Length: 87
Image (cartoon, rainbow, N blue to C red; front, side, top):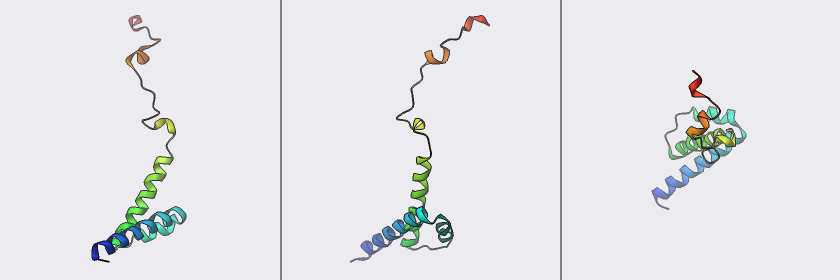
């Protein structure tokens, strides 16, 4: 195994650890992420942790807030039922 494959393997292992530890032990994940570890594994851990947090944030939004389900408003909807000349 050459050095590049080894670095990728370390990053991937750290990413998976960060994701899983954040999912099941968020307090431990917070403590681990505070360590200054500049290795590939440490970088992967932080990225895995961030990925899990990002996914959780997306899951908490109601489905109607997503762009795919949002109803399109037209200018007719904004003025419908208003009599603009009564002012």
